[in-house]
Image 1 (cartoon, one colour):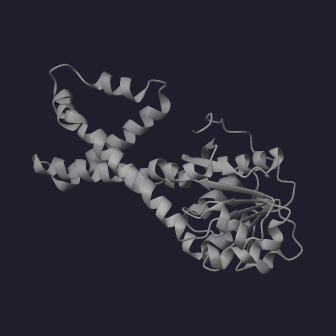
Image 2: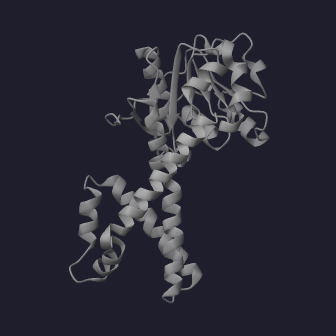
Image 3: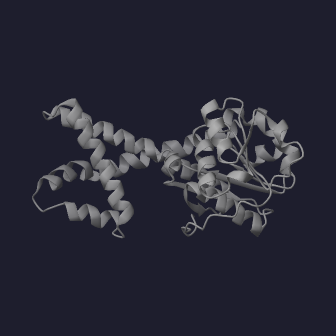
Length: 285
């Protein structure tokens, strides 16, 4: 079961051993920017052969070191290595970090890539954390869930927590197998919300709105509802009830969505399918 939600700490000092981010794409880049915002720019070593020159300049301006491959770590003694490469590339990329991982905490955010495989590719590092962030990490509004191996020390776990929370909130899990459920709910979850916006806009067109107006109304409604949810201590259930007047238009719509538990059942089936696919992918990595 997920642990207690953790609060965001104060930015960590810039002094200390290097923090490596291997793979600076959408999620790795979001993590790097979050760490820079937390005051860790001077400790970062960012490695990605495909990094855009504009990003290279921006990261270096913030004090980070950048490189195309693991050779940039020569002489370094990283405190943490964040593996943010694509899951299908992990078997090829991870072995190059085995030596550096011996005295570092390794944090993998590769979906479906089990610790058993990472141990094989990295020559069994002593400290390892598997985490699943999600897309809102790109704006510092993400939620990550993480599992730490038993050999990971308390100090290393706290370091991983500090690094992962640079892009949002964090919960700890008691078992690695729960990461597939996390992926199904929060990792894939933003796509469900985007699909809802698409569906609302399409439905708005069917009742007479122009495509432009329907799209704007749907988008802004979801943005506003999310902001309200974030700022209010009220539960989603009570917020829904506060919008639902007896005999009104919202009630008429919710009767359709909630009839025979149809929306709840559809979401349950969708998340179950994503969860099952996570286990399938794990068998191939």
